[in-house]
Length: 367
Image (tube, rainbow, N blue to C red; front, top):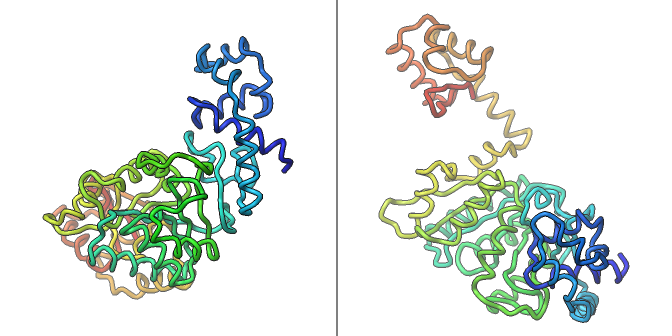
């Protein structure tokens, strides 16, 4: 990429009052990022949602000197950039309206290959939370899943360290530029992540650091992954924001349950109770729901089902569900010519054996 092209890409992110959604709209209407800066104010005003005030911000913006400084910083520290119109930009993020127009990385990682699971949770993780987090990530090792998180205290740093310990790649999404490290005690872990993963941020260097950056960076944590796992969270934790964003992006969201009175399980229990997250207690459950099982594991599951000894009634139901797919209990009763009481008892036994699963709305399916 030429420095001139990068200059314009960085410059548009530096215009005050121009966010990611507006920047993308401007680039689309003007036909390219360079054209945004050469377009006349009267034409910019006519773009839907722009108006005179925003058009003026663009035409008077003095951002190129600052953009040149950023290019020097990038070159000095061997930082890579990803612009949303480029081929290497993460496909997962491209489908998110408010994803970064441009972001910076330190490390080597192909965002468009493999599986990515974001793991988030409270900064004040309990021993229970850390133990569950480490165990789930350890058990994901055979599936070669990349672990993404925010390099914060608590569950975040636990997830990154567990990934590194098990030789899994890991992505750390930062709430500041790559010229600083917060918290500073995680600097050594950040260096290890660069060797086996990547640091990601949409903040340029010299950006003023403040806590409000962290909720904003959560959109990247949610959007860059296939699914989000919440390990521990209070009733108002930042992890709930990430889960909400993930749901808005149509990502799968999982949560680890905890005891009703435990403060740091309150958020997870709430997500599960509101059907905003699926309850999980193991890597196996995540892999099953995501379709990430290895061929060997899938074969074991099939064999387990084949060798379950079914009664005559159970076989009738299994055959019907195999042919018809998911069925409401009333339809299944009619198809099997079986009384409701007998059907309910038979289905319960089949659930215990792992042959069928019950879905919301009294619907059953063959596993």
